[in-house]
Image 1 (cartoon, helix red, strand yellow):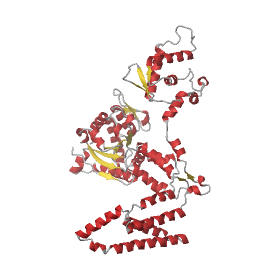
Image 2 (cartoon, rainbow, N blue to C red; image 1 turned 30 degrees about the vertical axis):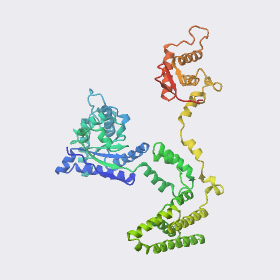
Image 3 (tube, rainbow, N blue to C red; image 1 turned 90 degrees about the vertical axis):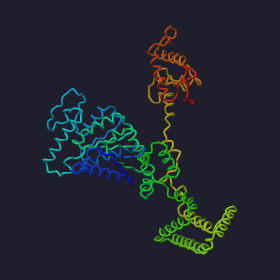
Image 4 (cartoon, one colour; image 1 turned 30 degrees about the horizontal axis):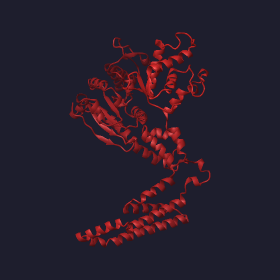
Amino acid sequence: PSERKKQKKTQGCPKNILDSLLEFTRKCSSTRQHSDWASQMRASEIPTAALVLGVNVPDHDLTFQSLSELLRDSVTPHVASLQAKECGALKQLMKRVLERVMGTVVDDDEEEEEEVQQPGSRRHHSVLCSLQALCDWYSSKTKKRSSAAVDEQHRQPPVVIIFKDLEAFNPRVLQDFILICSRYVQRLPLMFIFGIATAPSTIRHMLPNSVSSLLCIELFQSLSCTQHLTTVIDKLILTSNFPFKLSGRVMQVLVSIFLYHDFSVRNFIKDDDTLALCRAELVLTTVVFLRMLAKDELISLLQKCAEVLQPVKSKQMKNARVQLEELLAKFKQLDEVAAPDLQKKTDLFQLQKTLLEMNESRRSKRRSPFELLRNEAVEFIDSLVKNHLSPPESKPLYEVCYYSSSATVRRHLNATPRTSIQAALGRPYNYIQNDSLKAEDGTVSNAAPDICIAYKLHLECGRLINLYDWLEAYSTVVSAAEDGDPDSDGFGKVDEVKHARFIRAVSELEFLGFIKATRKKTDHVARLTWGGC
């Protein structure tokens, strides 16, 4: 096979990426129908689109769902979407592909014969789990299309297999599947789409050269999740279509959750469907950055401000526009005054002298004419903003359309699993609602689940917990729950069932992060949490 070909396409938005993928599938489908040598060599490989979507995994399902629908509507009805969790072995992977492409029941028992399928009852019969069965099925489908009045492009539509989470697939399973598919590529127009969350180098790490050489890979690169979020904020949130506004601190909490958790733009929007950012606070924040702008950038912004105020009819805005034009005229005069000095600075001595004077002025904190004029312009904009964009809190009934309680948002959206788990283990009645679990404050019923009893006992221990003492205490509590006679010889003794229940409870506590094994003492465990319920 010829060497792999990679072509990187960076798109501006997800829609463009989907359109490019559709065009890629159409191009690969038409390539197989040409008879020239280059097309035949390319047809000996499996066309593969490597779609790099980024680490915002929760958003991937929506992207692949849209992609599958577009492929079925405009390119091919034969699309199979796969996830790693349902394809742990090669037979499972093959079965999922056949079931989703053929829409029939697939028998993974190789000893059974393929059943004859009757028209209209296809879903009630099973076929063997092999690509040979898929080839036979595809051949029968293409023959029906050939006899019907169908254009040449749709007579042999490709069979598209989407691997949603490539990194999670077993590399050996994926390699075997590609090797098997390569043997049928002349009979079956297969095409792969790899969903990649990290980097394109994942393909090289998962597939050796002997396998990757069977693929003709084209790379499609999506924008990063932070760029997607910026686009959403600019085009959806920072508009006048949403009457409800959020304060800057509330918005900061939401952005922090986005950055520190799953990077999901979809979940960010789901947190509040009517997100909007207060423009006044945004402008006030921008004033700070105006002081750091260069002269050309500041003049350009002032000109845009004057253009925005041009159609406004109010007297105050007209006065503001006149003041802006006066500031622009001062900047222009500043350029004209500085222009003659350029002739004097051409010689080395004058240039050195000028640099020394600039250094001295910086040390003495003397400001240049431009800095003084820039501060004047910034102060004017600052006063203009304060006069016409007053804080929402200063308006009556601002609570109706403006939300500023960032602490409440943080409490509701930032999960605290440890606190919830401790509350459930310490007070199981609040969650199970069983009267037998009612107990006084600070105690736990002996009828509580094993993990609750073990958790409550471990709170009474220090940094290191003796497992045998812990087991003895647990056995005593459980024996009381079984209505045993405290005076009997067998009360509180450890039998095999109690021992197994205790081991399971300790393992669950270790899994939840309350304890861990320690090398200091083999019969002890170390306690990891303090201040429990």
